[in-house]
Image 1: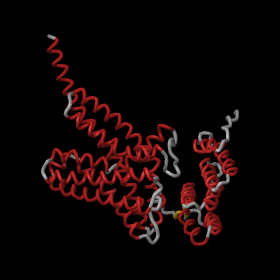
Image 2 (image 1 turned 90 degrees about the vertical axis):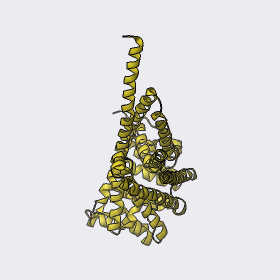
Image 3 (image 1 turned 120 degrees about the vertical axis):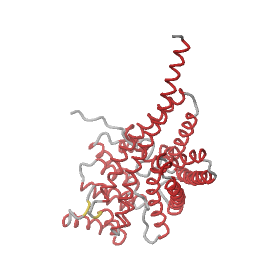
Image 4 (image 1 turned 45 degrees about the vertical axis):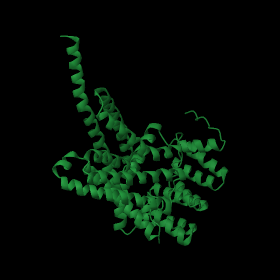
Length: 407
């Protein structure tokens, strides 16, 4: 057998492998992404719908700063539209890119696509209103990044519709894929954030309380620019030789594994707690105290906490996260004295919690009381030597890290 024949056979096998590897890797990536998005959609729909059914709209603020603002009808409607459209986009997108649906049910594909594009505009416009009118914890650079994402969503939707009307289905496919990626930007942020927490064993490059820092800014822009860049490489690989397609397939498999890890982290750390909260019949002690603080003041709220804890412990949710979330809401509103009282309640209820002392230390720091901040950060570290937030805070305050005591 000649060298030429062997080379031809090897080339043919490589081509056949590449022909199968690239679409298989793409399908695996898509199925993994859709599975993660469906879990996210179920968590969002469960939590926010249950709050509406119970008539407890202030519960929206538990996972979304300024999610519900009393008296702001326009803003509240914008939030509802954004949430509903986001859930619909995930469900609709799961169908829209399936070839069998496109071929066997073209009418369904067309109508689903129209509603998908309409929802893309709705989620973008409502999101822009939430970002610039209602306000958020994002800094200006992040707001511009989120705004660019919204603009790209509307551009991709318009171009996908235009090419479909013109029956240029090759171009339509490219714009539809771009739309799927940019409309998933917020979801990619959550997955990327959880992946970083898993790999780095904690927050690095950002403040987990404020959601600000260079890494979060990178995620905001990278959540849609990186997927778009990968898509362009994928489209080029489809037209390239066997080596290019195999390389792209390998890259997609790597990205799928990384994305899968981020999905698992987000599911356990964020989405499952939302689902549990949706079906938790207990009243939120955080929301109850927030209403009392607004109407009667912090002293009345502290008294109410102790009264309800003693009289109705099963009727209210006294989980540590309740007071922690309320305390940070007060910090964001610059009501530091009240935040200190709330975090002190949490320390009283959870005296072995490093996180509770860390939060109390942050409230004291925000109020300018460095001595109390240092004292609570030290207690947090004594309870958990791996508490990076407290260690970094003490370092910024000029307190040297104490070596661990010998056992």
